Image (cartoon, rainbow, N blue to C red):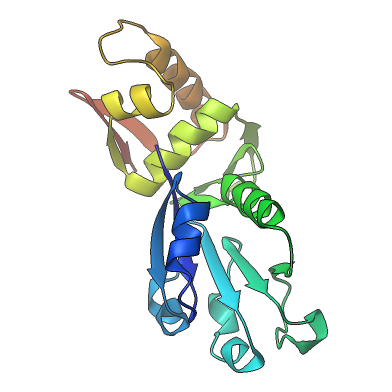
Length: 200
């Protein structure tokens, strides 16, 4: 299952990024698209190359799922709030590793829950519970898609071939549901035929 990644840039860097992140599903947009297309459930990479481009960005729309990459010095960037910033030049491996770490740790939210730093949090009552890496992947994908086939999760997250009989997914779902109950969320994972649906 490919991680989704939104890239906002006014440079023609499509070939470079497509090669660098061939294991991700990229959506490439310009900085002009930021106000309308910025996502709260998907990681957003914003690439700034000059001071004029930094002025195009509405700070109110920068959220925890944004990483700004810039070749400008920090004191030349006109940001009044704390942002996740990656200053270049850096090696290609440093850029790739930083972005991969950022993508894996991005916060996703749905109704009264968020997933952040290996935890499921109930934003209404401040309770939380730790999740395993696999539980995070399953729940994160459900939050983003709202509906997903069991077959897809088995094959792409659990790496189980479709012809193999196993209760592995059901075991993971039981543990996830238990942890969701612990934080007293109104969100439920419903099983319908061979699909999982996130409902409130």
